[in-house]
Image 1 (spheres, protein in one colour):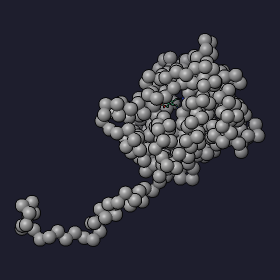
Image 2 (cartoon, rainbow, N blue to C red; image 1 turned 135 degrees about the vertical axis):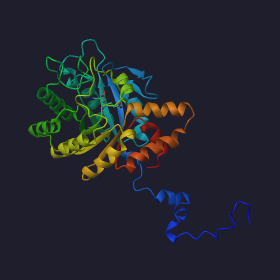
Image 3 (cartoon, rainbow, N blue to C red; image 1 turned 45 degrees about the vertical axis):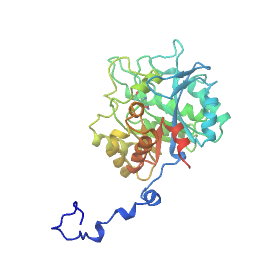
Image 4 (spheres, helix red, strand yellow; image 1 turned 30 degrees about the horizontal axis):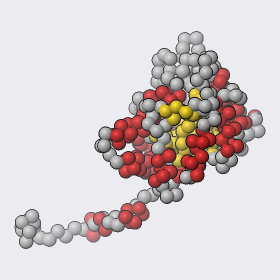
Length: 342
Ligand code: PB1
């Protein structure tokens, strides 16, 4: 008997139910264990569009991600669409002098980056699903996501009405979906009412950022979108990082107000929230947003050789699906389009 076998013990006789390894000892049976498999149609790719038509600018804190002008974006997206890209989410970035004011007027400027980009993409890629982030932070001089009172706090009513107007104008321009990331209370209801008043209620998928936390993982995005608040922070309108209860309340509220889908973000650090969101919003698509800080952290680990790029990206995205997400907003979309078969 081998020196490593304890002579004094009889041959191990486990219960039959103790034996699991036979169920996953083959690559195919390991695939069978997944309740949900990541596919290209689940991916929504964030794109940053500026008002400089010829811009093509790398974002140092967001490796492999660039900010484009409307004359450059179709050339960039063409090969991705050919590889199976189905959806983008547009973030407008007004760069011109004087483009920002306290009301975010340029957010739905017919000649602004978002509406121009909607039209260019609809023309070039008629089957591409165009989602537009709806917020004021990229367009306001103060960098907050809503309209402010004199004392610097949010004017909820004016903010919600402005957000709804912007959302309706994006749909009028041809957007298939609007995703308000502003976090103002009641904006989903206002957007739905605005769409109904415009006769567009059956034309747009309203994707609510319901469970969105005021963490420390949005820095690279703010670099790309030039959208950092000029004072204070977003803690008065993005959820506290410890707030499971508020997230559940916001999810139930947005579903009751008519959301067609919900986003939980950040993703990796909030998989518990994602799971609860999938239970509360079981009749709607739940979308994970793998935010810029999470993306940059993975890139840092990959660049340091701590993990293999494809392995760690797939592990992270499979975690979002395991927690109940059916969609993923991911800056890794271009790589995933190369790796995924379907
Ligand atoms: O990738 C990211 O970090 C997403 C950032 C996110 C975009 N929806 C917001 C984060 C923020 O700046 O607070 C933008 C809010 N309108």
